[in-house]
Amino acid sequence: MMSKIPKNYTHIHKEIASNFDHTVINEVVEQVKHEKVIADYPAYNFLGYVWWDGKQFNCEIWQYKEPVEIIKAPTIEEIMGTASDKYGVQ
Image 1 (spheres, helix red, strand yellow):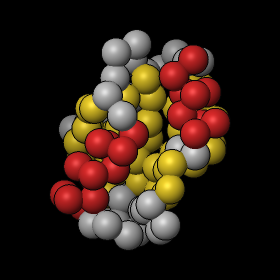
Image 2 (cartoon, helix red, strand yellow; image 1 turned 30 degrees about the horizontal axis):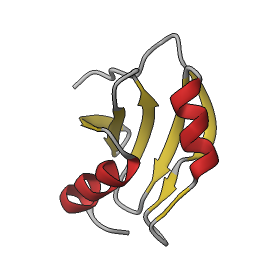
Image 3 (cartoon, one colour; image 1 turned 60 degrees about the vertical axis):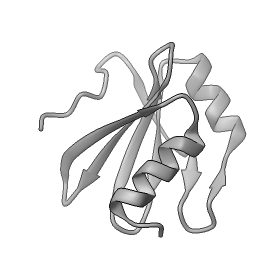
Image 4 (cartoon, one colour; image 1 turned 30 degrees about the vertical axis):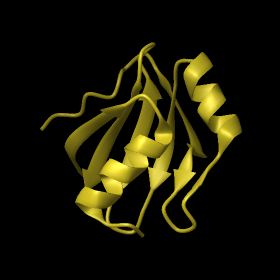
């Protein structure tokens, strides 16, 4: 799979959520929803890059330096649930 991360978005290098303690960082969620930015969603078995497309969150999952899937959902919590089910909860 080729990366589908929007080229006109800026990677802000901030975590939007963490699988370590299952927290969502609301200030980053709001920034992603209101600006053309991409935030990180780190976990033990994957790294997700998250952006908002005007309708929903998109999370491009990377493993071993390769993009493998894009998960889409209206909330970060749903992104976390799907990613954790597929790629591990830590």
